[in-house]
Length: 141
Image (tube, rainbow, N blue to C red; front, side, top):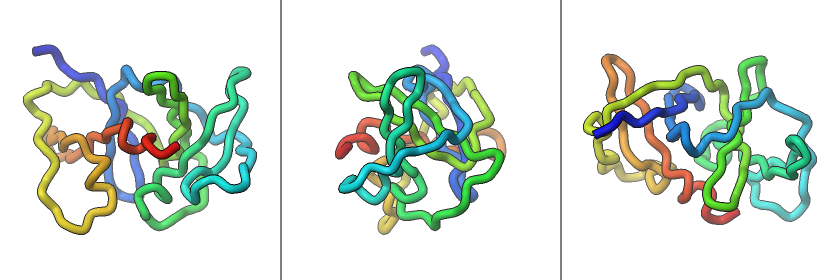
């Protein structure tokens, strides 16, 4: 069984991961144009190389406390089927190869807002990363 390549990023004090094959690029936080009438977690849109791309604040999507952007804030441009969306994260700084057998099913925790978005948990030495289900996160966009 081949390894899964993951992009690891931070939100608040947790590490999350998404498969690298779903990531188009990682960008510094650009100017975002607000769009009225969108969901609260949709920050707006950007023009990325001629493509208008919606931007989601993952902190807001997961009901995490908001924070001001910093020098390390990034937008991960992800693609799923015909959708391309940017995800605002606190920082994105790691690419990992993970053996598929290291991915455990999501824990049975009641009351976690992002539980439906979790595809699994990856333990690697002292690190614990939450593998996200992009299709669930992008479902209502």
